[in-house]
Amino acid sequence: MIRTTVLAVLLAASFPAFATEQAKAKPDLAKAKEIAEGVCVACHGADGNSPAAANPILAGQISEYLYKQLSNFKAADGKPAVRNNAIMGGMVAALSDEDMRNLAAYFSQQKMKPSLAKEEKLLAEGKTLWRMGDFEKGIPACAGCHGPAGAGLPVQYPRLAGQYAEYTASQLKTFRSHERANDSEKVMRTIAGKLSDHQIAAVAEYAAGLR
Figure 1 (cartoon, rainbow, N blue to C red):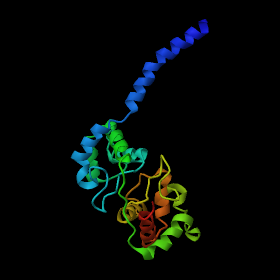
Figure 2: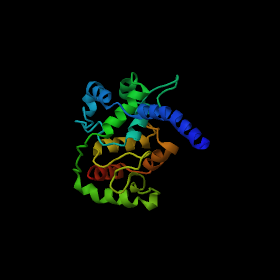
Figure 3: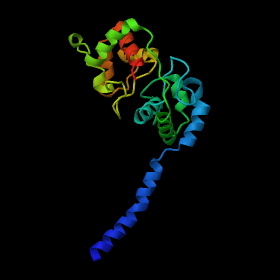
Figure 4: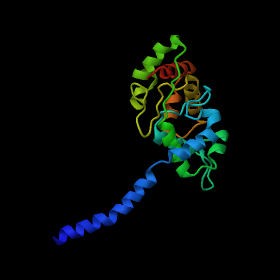
């Protein structure tokens, strides 16, 4: 009886703390929507469906991945941003950590309006790279990290299915040049460094058509 009472007291005492943590973790989607409509809309659309191929579609992207990217754009503790981009650096400068988590959750829950593959002549080669890679050049299959259908593998790897081919290609090239260097263990810099411009165009085109 005593043991039961003690256990009940301990559980009761721990519940408020647990509830507080749960409440803290729950994203404020209404606040995120306000930020999206006021700050993000011009480049990414209010719902994360970018109107321009130069900017990524954020709708339906993995929340943890979006939060990482937003965090990486922000300079902190006197150190430069991990992901160097003047425009995005300015956009996230005034955002709190909570704001970034809210935005990541908000965009992840929006319905994606996927891009389309346009260059059919590139699709066959893109499909081979996506599914099998290029053994001779030491390029692994994209599907190994981003999934057979391009949905991504939380938490590390983004969804690429339906993303603008132009944006995907541009990011592969910035990884290749090391202009973008926020990939864990230099994975993408290593892979992109082995890809030709033609291969980049092919795999980006194929990813755009995935669903």
